[in-house]
Length: 316
Image 1: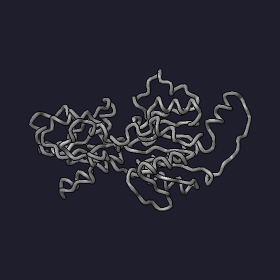
Image 2: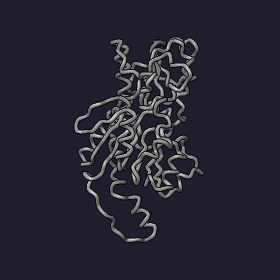
Image 3: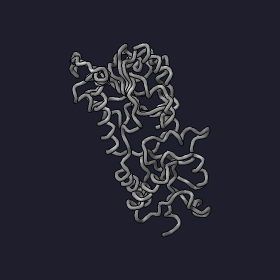
């Protein structure tokens, strides 16, 4: 194996998770040598042009002076973009049909959970209260999807097929069959004011961090419910608690948080109108992800082709 074929795996994973990824990546790329960054010599580090990463500490990548690009095994890459200077290497996000399928499944499942008043029935069960609640058809329920990237588009289309009135929002104008697409500040205000259930699938960027703060949360339709499967920093947690306590927001399903794991003392755990999930809405499947990474690296090695890279200014 020549030195130029060594690919460092750079992550902040624990030992068990790291070994799993190294195993599946190595099996998918038998002609490459995938090793933890710490095992590379100084000479080997200078020869590296591509690295595979999983939410790495960006400073670790600085020891690879000739790095051309990195391939993330996750969809989220915001940690590498939060430095003062833009990365000198290109970044490739994981675009995996299995990831999109899992997220669409989660969006549909938890939207139906809220649509069919499951939180209310759980409260009734805790009081041994037998009381059917009024039924509403999906066609009478408006669902708004914030973020119309790969994940958002598929989720919006699945919700529309289920019969919901679906609107989507993105920073710039988009067009999706059978979906009412809104954009810009006016579009954001409209989707907040009209949605019975709001699903957040936005990437974390300088433009979206804190987007759902006190000002925008106060625009949400009274009695609306919220799902956040994006990133915790998009929502102001204190502002969300305020709107939940006042009753403007009826219930929130939260899978992502400012700090993870969610501290045991955090008020979200015991709030009666919050469902806490441990960041499980769309877990990466190592086997399918490794196959995609391997094919992209083969295309680079043999054809000098890079997959679509992240716009470091936009953050996605």
